[in-house]
Length: 329
Image 1 (cartoon, rainbow, N blue to C red):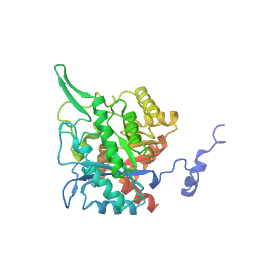
Image 2 (tube, helix red, strand yellow):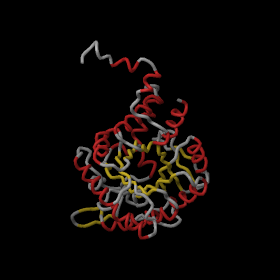
Image 3 (tube, rainbow, N blue to C red):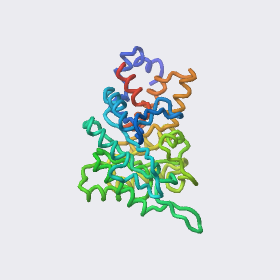
Image 4 (cartoon, rainbow, N blue to C red):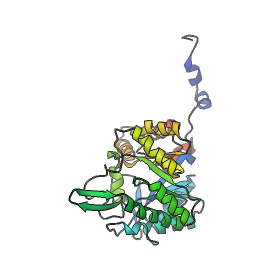
């Protein structure tokens, strides 16, 4: 049928009508809020490149948690920022590492808050890579299988501390199998894995590397993180993780990879998470501080677009602001 028989604007005629036919609903329950926990006392230090995001020490962490819970956010993603590093990231899997102590504190204060533990080595190694570094005449390589052993130890230590979900972000081949096997052997067969299945070697991570103190001291991560030009490869990565026992699939970053989210959503039945990463956040904040954009409108439109693309869960530094805006509406 053609105009004037079909008038699409009939369903846009009022706010109530638009709400009635809205296809995608963004809610607070869709949001996961990242938190950076660091050593020290009395620390609430704003991250220069991420306005409104802070480093928290264990004694100040409750302030952030109380605000997060009061806003109705059900889950947090925890990153530990240690004060000691070595070649194999020992502090990542120590019983009293910063991540493990943070998890225990969060679960003691808010047992119903879902704690997602980022499982990687980069912020714990003195070289900043996500695995064990090998040096030979042919150059520097990141060892895959020996890195898996350390990542599995890290995951078990996080589960022992009380983490509800293990979220491995390292992009080593076989990491879901290694972690699943280690968790099961340690009695944590009911602890799910939220796999960073499709993690690109992206320029959008810059502010995060400042926040996590995880910038590589040499080289880059292109041999283990994905090439931004590739899409079919993303399906192969996700297929491996599904076969290995992942419980969630994640795409990181978000904005430039919504096509990948849709591909995974159409192909797999597992919950799909998307990471609205640091530079995506910081660009919005910078433009808003200049008065160039309407921050609330931009953020809610962006997060809605991520959900419309197929994401079930959205990890975002905008989580608290978005929760306030959604509640006010």
